[in-house]
Image (cartoon, rainbow, N blue to C red; front, side, top):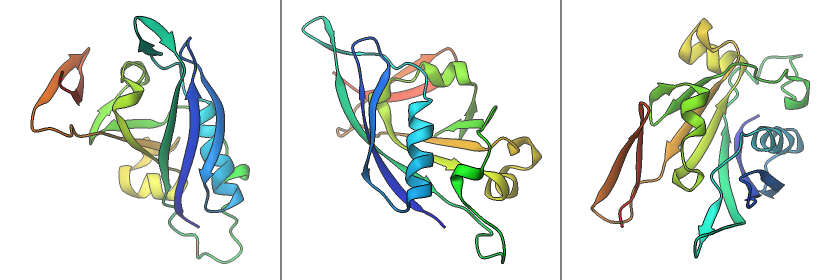
Length: 160
């Protein structure tokens, strides 16, 4: 089973992910896994309006690519899959740490893909036993890019 689940959530004034819900689902097991992944995200940077923190609503796509799903007798129910304890994390193809990921502004994220089990190991080797999180950042809507280096994380955001 595979597909793209759209998850809607709110980042509150303190930066916590709240009100996580499925905007458009594929299958209940994938929808539940996408909600679990987003709900377990670390704190984000809160939105700022007129100098004060505010709630910000987001909708993000999460792609599930589960290879080997045609094997007979094998269940791909996401709810039976153990949680990813120490996944590999890539931003625009570059491997980063969880600490580096936590410094990426949420509004810069275009999509998040999660690879688990065989699909992760097949593509990234045994280092991906705990899964892989692939983050793609948004490209600027203009020709100018503002580039920052946050402790080794290359972030492309909107220029002012």
